[in-house]
Image (cartoon, rainbow, N blue to C red; front, top):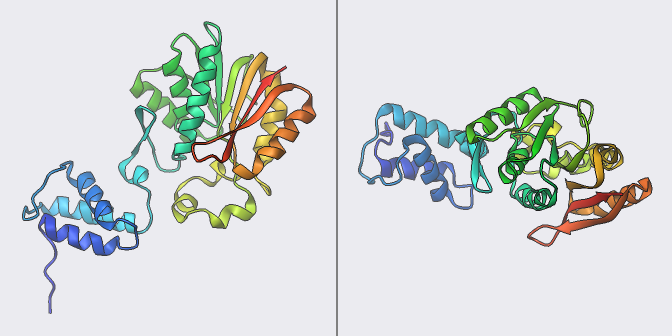
Length: 280
């Protein structure tokens, strides 16, 4: 017997719920797909959609069923009080990084007029953009080794009307001068933890933005060792890290003899998440 393909909003939502049944809230997922396909929030269940719109809806649902994250499907994601474009192959900002941004903005606002800030591994540019929005009088650099990420950061800054200096750099390799603030959400996933990551992270975020080496500390320890050469006296380094890495990063910082008032701050869930240290 031939099964009639769904054509109305109600039929399409019912079909999508079955496709997305492995998600905790399949109906919510289906409605989000419908909004993305149609641009309409309020549609009657008996309303018929055009063949083009039905095809778009089905493709979105099938991609979501495979685990494609919503920011990749939508091409945008929210961060603090603004939105950024998230092209394929660029790291998707996470809620923890919003907390890092708030810490960085607080520190940057304490700096003198014309202060300089550096965002290492900028990705979509969210940290640099947040800093530039908070301090239009400052100079904000955004560096990354990925040309794709740099294009995204530059475009997002232009869309939001903020000025940042975008440069390709492997950590500090192309950085010039000294800064009042250095902030980074570096790759910090340990090799043994890779398989425990959600499938959407493993499959859709660039591995280079996550892989922190055997124990996840490769970039964190490099930043702690190298950042003092690029900070003014009293300048601050802020890093996002895994909860299990805080003590190791603190020990590394203390061994350099170049930091004071080092601490690991908790995220909103109470987990140790952010390193903060001030240049001696």
